[in-house]
Image (cartoon, rainbow, N blue to C red; front, side, top):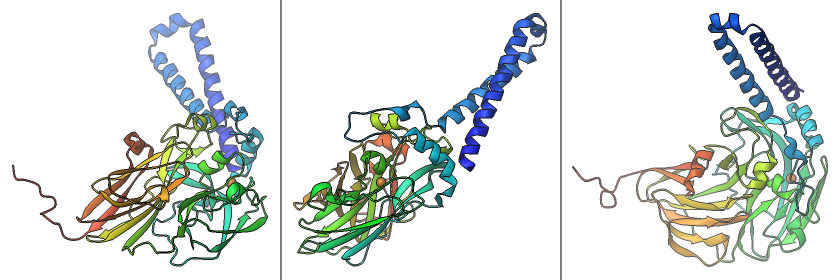
Length: 392
Ligand SMILES: [Cu+2]
């Protein structure tokens, strides 16, 4: 009941301040002649007005709005979290596990292929930016979900468990699957239950997987996405370092930087105007976790969970030697910025020639201020032949 109580206390305090303000105004109207002689009263009134407006703003920002009743033209009953569910959420929010760090480490890649993946959907509370808390829906408690790997022609089995404390049905649609719903048609799992299905990996490539329970976009933007690599017959060339990155969006009721628990904002979601855009689930998730040495060959597996934006992926100070556009088979060379569609993924390879900090961005650069950047740190010897400051 902590979150609901907090909200009610905030709202009560806001109303109390407003009532005090109204009383003061009425009192002023009655005795304005006397008040004019004591100008400090104006100051008191202004302070109380500002405080009550601030309090009301804060309280309303943490509350589901009337947008929750919005109806759409989509195939599902959305995009709202139904209002009843929002109340249920506020009541049960303190039962969700608080995840200290929601970010999947970009080094968290499997060493070997597996034939059977067991994944658990878990709804949690986590910090997306300093002191900004959101309700995330995850695969295995991290964003993105686990990196899955198999070889073309493999028979792959996926079990999805839905944690009993969850409020929603969840599912899995892997873009590597050929067949209705990509798995989702047979993998809708109620809280406390589990389901299993198997598929044959027909096409090599790097694919997004995501929850596909209506409203699908709402589930995805809460963090339910990850990547699956179906290796080709001829293995990808050996590299020194591999990293796993997925871009995502978060639509919070409060503005950027507003602290406290934030509720999902369905209007911002429909308008395609995320409050936060992030790599691996939170602001600065990659920083301190991506290291390489001069001369290393790097491979990035980069996905875009969307749900609205196309990523314009770029590494400042590097040129991609090889790009597998949209994770497919033909490759391109010498690419500066590569487009990763919502619901798509790309393999990027480059060698690092100089030490320093290389910033990964979505090159629609206003998005940096919404959080979508990370640092690759490279150590080693400087090479004057490649890059030299000239004396003045
Ligand atoms: Cu889901």
